[in-house]
Length: 279
Image (cartoon, rainbow, N blue to C red):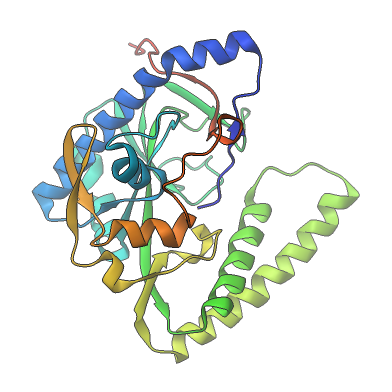
């Protein structure tokens, strides 16, 4: 869950354009979420609102007013079923984006993209031809070993950061050359330790995002998530963790305090919610 957020301190004309079009972006993302919910209900696939989307549901009963993306989570088994089923169930303007379905993608996060829109964030490679429409992020969750939380935190953060640095676009310099070897060695070492501990230690108490996506090193107790319940978001009922308040506290600490304007961050550098479909 590494974020590449940028503040709204940008060209005033661009800021005004994005502010005027944020609502349209949110409406399109909500439409994607409703399609995902339909598929999951039809095929009995478990999922729940995650991250800022769940925060918005609890604190605002809708989107965080300045948020420009949607996040959900799925247990790993349900996630595998979803990516098998979704391509044949999604309408033609929505695309299931994975490194397998869109090979130019250089990160491991699964997204459902709206092909009739355009969305660019800081990590995007504009030379690559992968789809860049508005999206919903899907994070697969898995059981974690019963270890001290400090150990989990350090190992998962190290693995995720190393993986991201190794897979992002690189520029030729002495620093990038040294980083490649340093983070490559760190990734191999931390991943090996994690796999040994995962094989040797009891699992079932903790659940979280797969390690290469767990940039904050956060875990949740199973009781925080299960049994799943529902929550109101933008006028609809979606699946939610059993204890969304504790879930959000695990993620953000004091999530009820609305941040000051200068700390309200979005992900996008630019978006256009209404591209004309290509014939």
